[in-house]
Amino acid sequence: MNLMNLIDSPKSVLDETDGVFTFKNKNTTLGFVRFNNLGEVEYIFVNPLFRKKKLAKNLLKLVREKTQKKIVFQKPISPLGSKLLKSIEKWD
Image (cartoon, helix red, strand yellow):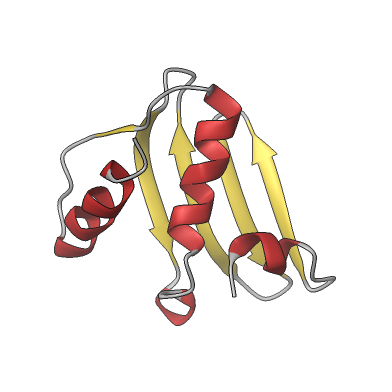
């Protein structure tokens, strides 16, 4: 299951505000990404209960579509962040 399939679900919503995509259902935030117009990702989070469902990758694809820029990250501070960065580098 990916983000695009979940977005079509009546139980979930994708909100976009200035520089933030937030994916949530009526009970909790599933994930969000904060970015700027240069494609720089400041922060990305996926609720641990919803990890391993490609939510982070799909949120980042939304950033790339929105900014039309190559995604750039601040240095990851966690092993999960490093793993995500390696998988995203394969896109280019």
